[in-house]
Image (spheres, rainbow, N blue to C red):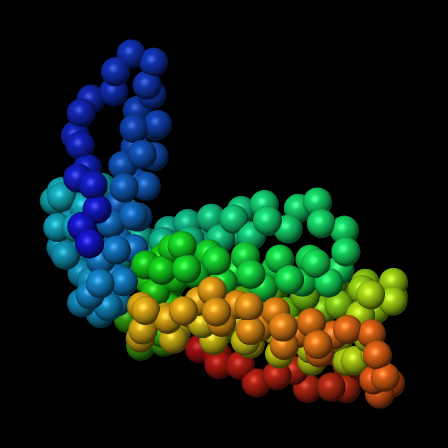
Length: 232
């Protein structure tokens, strides 16, 4: 899916060159997202990305030092927009169970509304490597995703809105279920994300609601091992 062609028009009155350059960089990033999603990371060379952008490779290297620089811009762009999208749908909700519902559905809705963005990030995380062959990205971002979920669950438990369960492991389970969607979506663009989201909501509403649940001791971060994650 080619992106809109990058124009080479000179800045007009009231437009700064930096504004024009920012717009062109954004167009290149959008083209890179579509190219990586369509072709896969290895095949999405700067030359192919330039084709998607309707411009020359020289224009790309003017704005980005190399493919790694461009790929970092893609990851930053997608994660920033995802954060804004999800944050806007959670803001103002006071009930912890409703926040959890909105958190799950807003992630799934972002995947549904911006599939190429998510597929591109999956391709990058799975395949991007430096010159020595080491992955450019590891899975540390999962820790950052689990922490706010754990905090939400603990707060809800303190207010009696959630039941008695080990909050960290529940957060790991919730995030794992959400995080399973992008790789699946990369393989199957017809995946019914809406149905999957509603199933997740029902499952975790049942798993977290107050009831006759076994008491769990607080997790000790000093003695308990973290869930296994892939490193470099």
